[in-house]
Amino acid sequence: MTAFLKVEAISKRFGGLRAVDNVEFAVQAGELVSLIGPNGAGKTTLFNLLTGQLAPTSGKVLFEGRDISRLAPDRRARLGFGRTFQISQTLASMTVLENGMVGAFLHHRSIAAAADRAAEALEMVGLRARAGHRASNLTLGERRRLEVARALAMDPRIVLLDEVMAGLNQTEVREIIDLVLRLNGAGLTFLVIEHNLKVVRAFSRRVLVLNRGALLAEGDAEAVLNDPAVIEAYIGGRRG
Image (cartoon, rainbow, N blue to C red; front, side, top):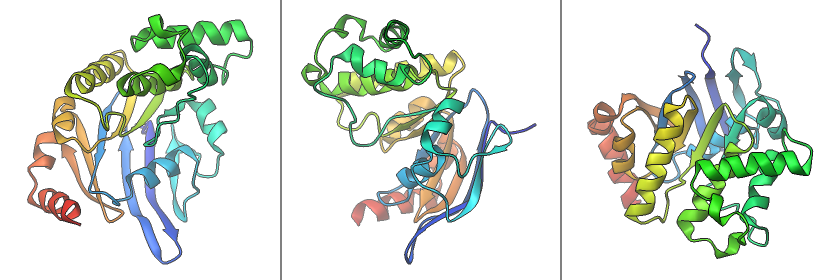
């Protein structure tokens, strides 16, 4: 069976630094996969290779069997890649609805159609009532949900979440966990960068571990998180 998303021996060098080192894995349609690792492990660089912000030094990214390694980010978005970013990309001077419309315009050219799709996405993340508010007035948790809504408005087939729960309180974290699990239960595929291991356990799905750019471990969440090599990498990374 052809993998939905497959990464083949992908590497990215910046001068003498190998930020991603010969990484291989596959994600099937409908999966929820967590990507973890200490700071500087290469997680966001890997996301950028998947979504086209960076081109690989070597290796391939395959989507439904098609090599998309050299496609621009907008081309990959049209194929079905949605993502959030580690640093908030909320457009603070625009309304919540207008932020959602930025994503919706990918497939909906008219203002009315884009507004309708954005409103649907806001409903999915619990922000429909805030549609007319300035994004600058949202709480951090609401801004994170807005970023997810903007990705959803793009009608994605896979969503890459880059530390979407960073800085949130426990209630807000629970809301995002419930949202992701609900969307995944409806069939949407997720690849999630997450530092909070309690969140990773809550997902209880397959986990990939990066360390120094290389794939250190892969498998069931509990097995991976109890792996001595993974524990050492995390402790060592946090000491550094």
